[in-house]
Length: 111
Length: 117
Image (tube, rainbow over all chains, first blue to last red; front, side, top):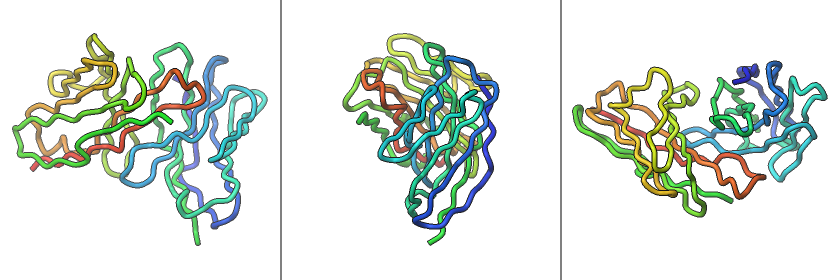
């Protein structure tokens, strides 16, 4: 499994954009990059995933570096409900398909 | 979107007893489900992969005789913590993926908080 490096914590103000980085320099060519978040005392929640191209959905945007060794999850306007631990996880399609969680980034959103 | 239901949400049991946790995929079939454990202020730790109709695959260091997994149908996997002890107290979470909905990732249950007294 590809290893990931994320900041332990980040802080943002409400209504401002947030850029959450993830380094996955050992990613293989067939690994998709998944992002999940976990609010306190809840199961994780899917946010977004992508392979090479940047992706957008109603929750966030995912910017993937051209060499695929890093990616950035973008929350366009942070709200208090976005305060959570965010995890980026490379997954090999057609492999074990296991989601192995790292330590993630704890995002604090200030009112 | 895909929904995974986990039951119970919390349970308190006496030391030495067994506890069963259910994980259901409500609107899709799941040949594979995953079980995680999470201790306070730590990340999720994958315990095992539950395979419909066959034996579960356990991660290194997870006692298969203590954490019994049964995946008897395409929508239900159960985790039984046998002879529970206080150190088994944790937050247990299951997960599955709806392969028919490619644009979605993995869906997680809401978790079960187990307290062994």
